[in-house]
Amino acid sequence: MAAERQTVIGTFVFGGFVLALAAIILFGNFRLFSSTTRAAVVFQGSISGLSVGAPVTFRGVRIGSVQNIMLQFDSQKSTAYIPVTLQLQPDRIRVTGQKGTSQAVLNLSALVAQGLRAELVTQSFVTGQSEINLDFYPAAPAALHPGATDLPEIPTRLSTVQRVQEELSQLPLRELVENANTTLESLKQLSDRLDKQLPPLVANLQVTTQESSRTVTTATDAITHLQRRLDDTLTRATQLLATGDRQISERGADLHSMLVSSAQAARQASETLSEVRSLTSSRSETRINLDSTLRDLAATASSLRGFASDIERNPQLLLTGRRP
Image (tube, rainbow, N blue to C red; front, side, top):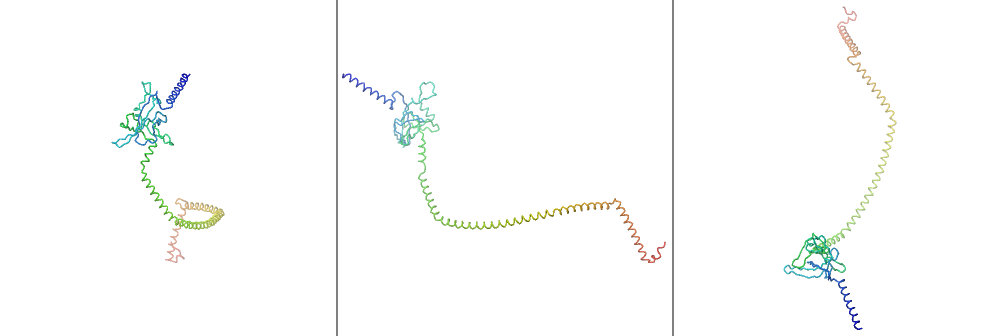
């Protein structure tokens, strides 16, 4: 009876031990049946928030964890290094494109040559915990530290937050603060000057506004009066044009008849000139007769002049006549 009880107790204890061991293996970080690859990442800046056991990811996929963190000081260069040992799990990484091997081989040197870099990123802004993320950045320089670790080293790259922090740390904050204080002082002086100069300026503006208002009122009255006079002038001009139009319409018939008479007189004058031209032509019969008549008249006049001369010399010729 006692032997059976001891057997049952022993079986129960052994079963509990097996279950505990299985739970440790399944839910713990122990990899009894899987191989691991160790690598190192060397930081020179702050790694605040990074602790042992922190995840190591590649674009968000966990491929390992932080195994160890050390602080190494180089007395010759007066420089502090922080080597961080990474424990990578090759069984979570599948490498393709390799020929002649049936199992993937994680060649860190080749991956680093292709641009594999490590950066410290914030895992949670609430807790402030950090993790190490791996990715390919071929443009980032590969700065190695051979004397800081004996393990294969993965070069580091500043994360976005670290770059912002570095840029902020390089800003001339003292000069910016001094410039801001100078600007504020200038603004204060300008405000005081405006407080002193604005009231008289506002008063002058009010007076100028009132004068401008009176000027505008006077100009408006003058324009209104001028507009009235212009309206009267336009009305009179319209009446004058209407009267002239009416008189022109009334005198139109007289002008037409006068123009007709003028045209007839011009035609008659043209006909008369034509007749005079035909009469005075050297070849016309009338001109020839007129020339003959003028010659006869000239001969007669010559005879009369001769007869008159004879009478003057001898008045008796009127009684006796000329003797043959």
